[in-house]
Amino acid sequence: MRTVNEHRTYLEGLAAQVENPAAGFFGPGSVAWRLNGELVLGLVVLRALFMQVAHPKVAQGVADHSDFRRKPFARALATFRAQKRIVFGTCEEAIEALMRIYARHSAVSGKAEPSAYQANDPALLFWVYATLLDSMVYAYRTFLPGLAPAEWERFYEEGKLFALLIGIPEEHVPSRLADFNAWMAAALAGEEIYVSPAGFEIGQSLLRMPVRLAAPLTGFLAAGTLPPKLRNQFGLPWSAGRQRGFAGLASFVRTAARFTPRFLRTAPVYWVALCRVRHSALSSASSNHI
Image (cartoon, rainbow, N blue to C red; front, side, top):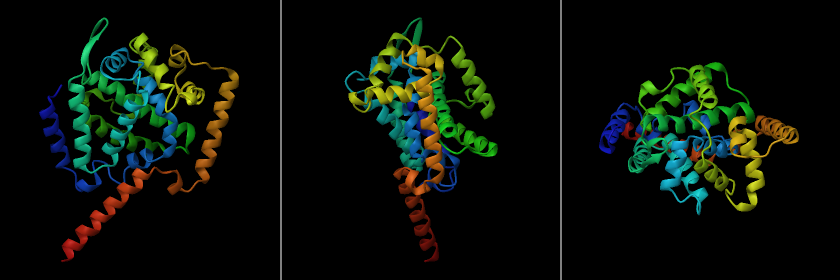
């Protein structure tokens, strides 16, 4: 694992290779911008969070070092704000967000039976990264018009850069999307991923997001999107009737997305970032003309 200073130096080295730092590490031509801008991704936020704490060491780290019992929404909001800043921010903004996460995680360590955990352990970082990536793929295949195979591969290549940015060594990342999908299937089927008592308690707190009255709806979305093994271990109710209801919801969202103009179904952060990049390009062109 890198020290905090080593990781900053590494990130600054990557930024030095970026052609237009104002566009960030990905830029408006990337699949990452297109996919991360979709508002429908909000339907899988709970899926990603539940899956993250289905790793006992991640769950223990959250239990030991966060105030999830009183503020279950705070960590989730911070996580996804940071993700948006990393994807849509300038290189400088992305690095600052990345360093806040990396520095905080450097202080997160403890005991998770039968061994210890450290938040910047590449294996734990990869599990968190994998849940985000897998949930985005799930969202796009369930609620949105599908992508062509070549676009999926391009998206995965860009995702590998995201993994490097958060501190995961290149050798930990499967080379192709098919390899990643096989890894995820094996991880879910194996014994390392399961809901510990700490994970179960955190899962119950997540159902109160954003308010306690929303628990039936959040529980339905979490149960419908989670892999069956984790749905059962988190104790989320499911039935044939709920499955039909969820399939109907997915069909409705897919149809609505097909006929909804892009500017209505894209998050404001995408348009703000796009305006920033265009303004930067105009300023640069004006300077060169002068």
